[in-house]
Image 1 (tube, helix red, strand yellow):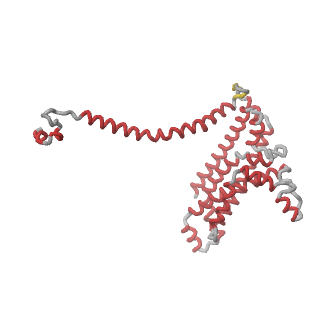
Image 2 (cartoon, helix red, strand yellow):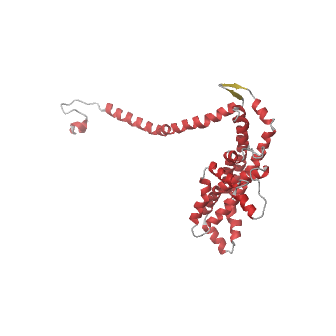
Amino acid sequence: MTANLLAAPWQAGFSTRGWVIVDDTTSTDSAVETSVRGNRLDRNARFIFLAPTVFYLLLLGIFPLIFSLYMVFAQWRAREISWVGMQNLNRLFEQDRFYNSVKLTILFVLIVTLAELILGTLVALGLQSTLRGKNGFRLLFTLPMLLPPIAVAYTWRTMFDYNQGPLNYFLSELGLNRVGWLGHPQWAFFSIAIVDIWQWTPFIALGVLAALEAQSTELYEAATVDGASWWQLVKDLALPLLAPYAIALVALRSIDAFKVVDTIFILTGGGPGTSTELLTFYGYVAGFRPFNMGYTSAVAWSLVVMMTIVFFILLRVLRRADEEF
């Protein structure tokens, strides 16, 4: 206490007009409270900034998903939504047209993903080689992927034209018969697949190319020193190391291929007959066009189930590939 009295008045806690004790606990408590509030605000800041994003996802993502699941068991007429139970699902499973669409969808996904994987890997291997102007080739191969699907579909519709299309013109110049690209059931289906392969092969190529360039060059240099040929490098070294990346790319592309609808709408409209009526387009024709939202939701959720099954199968294969390689 004596030491505090000998100190300066403002250090000892006394006023300058006399030996009157001044209590500083109020100001200290106020500073501590302000500090606590600041720390609490810092801790809650992340939730404040995340709130708009969460609200956006709930409004435009979760709510439509839940509402469409409810509509599977309901019927929307005018402004009234009524519960119908399993009526939409029973109608869906009784339609041969639905099973035909499921078969065509699975076949389409298998064809385009397998073709895009093979062609994309070949393109990536070619782009990885040290060629002059390879950056220009990389940009050139990415252009189809950057184009709007509607524009791509209209362009290919012109090319597939039976009388004035460039494809049939070259066939006739070679002495071959013209092909009804969009008028024959089998050719129409493969024409849609050709368009999808042309546009999305660059996606696989860029992914495989990124995986190739991420690999260590020391492995290839050691194998080359040991006398391995280019084909042996690709077969025994590059492809096994690419397996996990390739499976992930196939998963992304297959999920996207399930949802194709704009190309079909422009090129064939689901025809001839129902030869190109994939599940997404079937939902549009049989449910959305007559404004049967319950049946449309049933078709959409059947597609979700198919995509989920495919995704988990590929995910399991990917885990096995990671364990092996």
